[in-house]
Figure 1 (cartoon, rainbow, N blue to C red):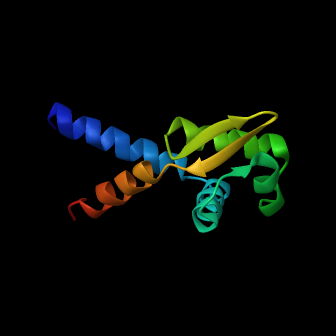
Figure 2: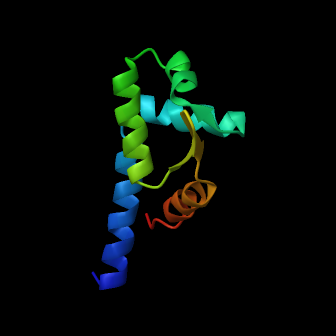
Length: 97
């Protein structure tokens, strides 16, 4: 495997790993359907988990680049990173069977 292919495989793995829990998929789906940013409290309202747990899931999605955060004191607003979602879609579409 060449360096470029290995990097591409690692990136796809990172993106898929970020979506490896149903709560993280629910967060992405919810924010995508809203088409606006939302606070952690809003996300907690749709996911039946403790706020600290939802926060950890949000952190994993941010680390993978699937979410962006905007600080508007005193809250942080989260939204999907459409470029990363498109990247994931493209990488999955180009998998060879």
